[in-house]
Figure 1 (cartoon, helix red, strand yellow):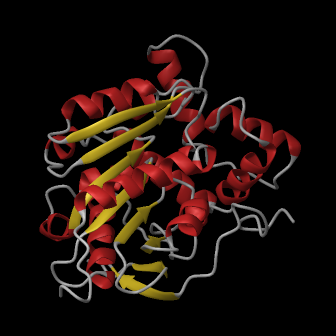
Figure 2: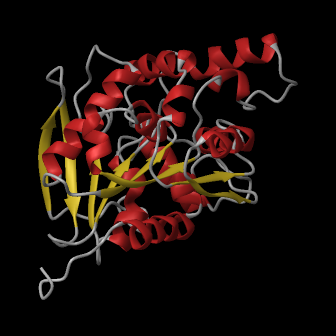
Length: 307
């Protein structure tokens, strides 16, 4: 059971995609892509975070695919996308552009939602021509643009060099996470989720995070440690909504507030009381609702009669 890559029943069990494909990034990296929902429906693209996979978006995919074309992909080294020696913000941007090119028609626009490192992917791609051609609006969930390790409150001591050092050691650990045990669930819940998160939510997150190869986890932790995408935030010139949990220890609310203040077209900041870092799993309905709102406001749907 410890080897299960995700839960296989309940609301967080990944639904079967309508089809799958492989997108090839600028350096040849191959990315697993899933497409859910009907052809011709408004497009939504989902970018997951560090140590996660397409399975992380299961609740949103299940709800949105009824009337949206939902495109989800595994970041390089995660899920079913092979690992690559190239780990950088530029690689994240390359990968998102490759997915957009492989799944959207020329000129077709989508709402792009990114959680944690997925949100950083969006910021990294903000100036790219391929991104600007396809992004109608953006949802940033539980993410930040710089000073990620220093801002984290996973280590419960006051901010300063000792906390930053300890946090860097913990998040950058090369140790295997091992099987999903009761202790592992408690640790993951403390670090990444709100105290009120239900056991089935914790289980869903634990299965996904523990499935991430430790070398991949470590390599991307080094990228996140040095990340500075403040310029990308200022260049994200599409309507952008921001969501954060008030109990987020990895990218605390101050990070979200800084994003909202710097974004050229912030459409709103939502702070969710008691919710931690894993907002798409902890608050699935709210995240799906924000995506729907952005689609309704910023994607023009052309009916067959008027086409």
